[in-house]
Length: 312
Image 1 (cartoon, rainbow, N blue to C red):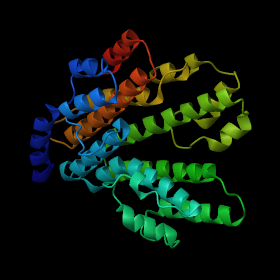
Image 2 (cartoon, helix red, strand yellow; image 1 turned 180 degrees about the vertical axis):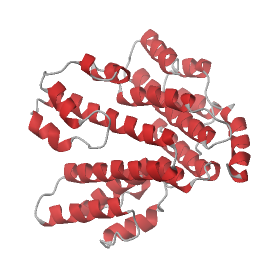
Image 3 (tube, rainbow, N blue to C red; image 1 turned 60 degrees about the vertical axis):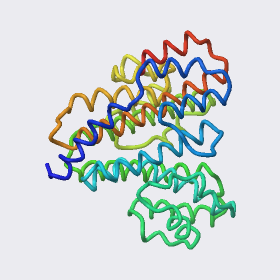
Image 4 (cartoon, rainbow, N blue to C red; image 1 turned 135 degrees about the vertical axis):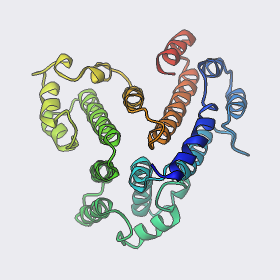
């Protein structure tokens, strides 16, 4: 391991002490009104000057985490892996803005790998040479679809999602880190299971599902199609995904799998502490978001507390 990463791991040990405790999550679950929620978030380190919206506070605060991880992860391929999700979020936002003739830059993550302004200008000029091969090909394909009259936000989402997972696997392989390969697999599997659930609720057919499913995960699309059609049950699928399959939350399922994988590969002399810290911040942000949403929607406080104790 490089001396830079060793130094970064020392910083991570300090930063990890600032992560939210169960007690803080439980306190947040008792808030009454947005003003109190914002006060508690500020107390817990989620302060954004002049911002009076919880969702915006979480997004802008997490943007600072992206900036932080650039200093804490010295492996370029591993860093690209971690930032990939946020680059593709930005790509979707900016591509939709391009065709709606609007600037949605403020909805982007400022500290993803590609600078937002450069990305927006490149998209508007149909010049994708600056981006990864997978992203460039997806953007070219979107332009071709729109030129042929197939103008749909779903086309943008599908083509960029496919490119995202292709890039995710690429960066995982090039990192030389088995942990990232397994994390990429978990992300593909949970994304596909979410598609199965969504298509079932919408009453769509297996052929439509097969068109959308992402290749490359350990749970093959053909297996998920068979499950969708009732030819298999959740018992035929890996145990760690069964909770999600029978109605669980995709983000929480992914967070649980990530937590176990990162713990299994614990090694303070590698980049594992950087990955552990980053994903702890991801899970923390998602759990706070879930708590705030549940309280606003009037979910029973005891159920919220049960959810916190199960996921914190």
